[in-house]
Image (tube, rainbow, N blue to C red; front, side):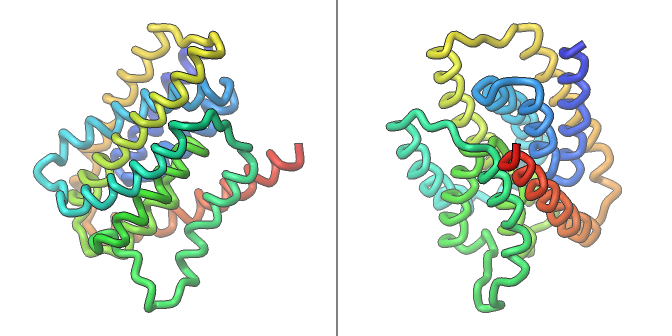
Length: 244
């Protein structure tokens, strides 16, 4: 029964991410966290999202904006270097609240602060903050999305470039938390891993069929409201975690 539930969650959330390039990973992390230990949830989420985002890299490979990648990866490597010398497992409640606040903070920033990821310094900042939140909370949607929603990239460019950077982050998270699972003596069955990978690939394929019917303007408008809703959910979830 749990396999079916995890497969369904991976399928639906990968479809959502395939259409909006956001939200799916956050929802999936919530499901995995409810059913598994933190290291196991992080590891399985890393596997699922690496394949989910990796398939989008293939679908939109001709639209990836390469100039964003170098400064982004430099920022990401700084965070990975810090985590590599520690064995830190975060408090979920506080992290959820911080992530949930990001979309709202972006709305009140002065106009002089432009978070457009096409600027090298903003791509670097995105690499830092997004990788940090991926390592702490498993998902980083509201953080990453605010850097893209202020850009003039097309939906195909957003989907492809975000997918590549997210794939990198999820692989790093998989390695880190997978090693913690090994040391703790935890395992994930091959059947479970294969089932969520299949669900991720299928969900993204279905999403790629739907995205063709959505305009660039609709894509960004829906995304703007989506991250606000998901951010609110994360804040509520964080408060519940802290009060338990």
